[in-house]
Image (cartoon, rainbow, N blue to C red):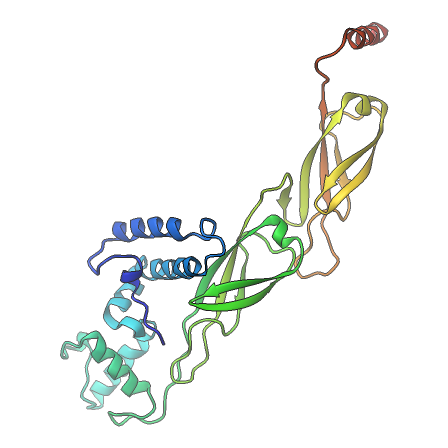
Length: 299
């Protein structure tokens, strides 16, 4: 399993403070963010590694294990337990906590392999299998991208993964891709990949769950007399009847014109349209005269 030096990824040394880690992460995350490096595979890979490094080094417990065990930090608990058991049974090894010798990172790795590697240079039996590390990734999409089911290629830890993105995925939603995490140890199962969706909205529609909301300008003449207008929905234009004497702020529901329901083929939410009546400007003398006549009639 390839060793990734998280300190090197964040351009820090092991004496870095929590503030140093936070500052380095923010700086590098901005530099390699996918939005600023579209279609750059190397920048995407670097961004994933930066997030992974920050996740470990910003957590005091995880950082302590990483500092002590290096690439085997995910198995620190099993390592400590195995070391204590071998010490008690006269196996010749004791952990730091037990007052044993000082081991370097390479010594720990060698011991880990001898304990769990299957060949047992120190008299071990069969291999002990361990599950690989779970990976976390963030996928940035636009709202229009998730209106239809489509395929997307995501690069995680240097590997390209072809995914099917179901229509209706929501911002912040997390999905699991089994067996696409880190490789298992000694033939153990791979970890899983967890993808968090970050969905930006560059449309005129507001999304709440499966429903969409929008404002539509309505001229005063259509509002008073009624008629028919053409409006934009998310998947095209539709004609909408307007009732006479429609008031400003009136809401109209267009059933089935909202957003797709996640993993429910053919089901959609609704679209809610709010009318915003526009008062005419730059009136001609004749138009002003007619409005004055109307005002007299109302009196």
